[in-house]
Image (cartoon, rainbow, N blue to C red; front, side, top):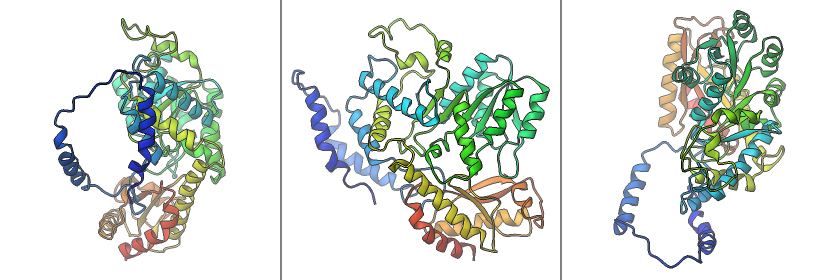
Length: 446
């Protein structure tokens, strides 16, 4: 089940890398504790076994997708150099790889001109986007939906920027009417739209939000950390397709290659449509940026030291699996969506299950039927535990009770939130395992 070919594929690449530095005088590296390395690694392997099997199709819970073998190998190969992509002194080759890989991400979203870079993840990438938004509209509010990631409110607090929450519709998407009501009050400088909420995979209605921008000027940032790569999918519903196609009109966008981009943690990316925002990053460094007149990535990033190995891994993955519509990478994303639709259809047709809405991407949300939100919550936890005992690992989510009661009015609402079951079917292999997952779920709900 693990990639046993990893070490068999590496020697030739290591030899090529060693050849690149063959002109250096011979030397021998000091390896403190070298004799005990096998013992420590054996202990580590034993400790790592105390994990859920995130790499297996029977892990159908949180947003954990195994990196592609080429990403793991590229990262490991680059770690022999251990480049730092802050300045060209520390990561000359991998800085170029980062610029190339980021340009490919920008092209995927339809940004012909752009400024951007990799980050440690979506949190840091979103922080940079909201920092830029705050600099361009000082003192004005940033707003996001009630189902947006919690880090937006936390980030604005860290930055000292006013924040307001926008109500959602019954599918977990930002409600354009609620947004307009906030915009009428004035003082809104930026709107954060989410393309793939972490709870339900909902995609905010960007076409309607962009219509509002024509009447109420504001900056639009799209948090596509989870759903951004679905721009390549050819099997989306029309409203989702229209929303993702509209990202090209946003001012900035964030995507996490360590989610659907087949990368190890941590690898996020922030992209700005207008390269002129780079002037906001301007700073002085007395020793860092003088070895080359080329752009040093540290000049357009709030983070300083960043792993060049992450850029090498992403670059190698793009070389192997280009970000093209209909390509092999896109087909993997489409398989994830088919798996989600297949599982949703089975759940929807089961009278013992509540399904609030069809998945927009590859996240499926459901709950065991009950007479009240209290009973539904309790039964969801029971199914979660029973499924785990049978080898199927799911996730739980606290969602607004209105998501269920709007479709099932007979449900007695006793609390504002209800515990539901949730699965991110983000491995292409999940498509072939839906039937097995369904068998376990039937046993768990019985």
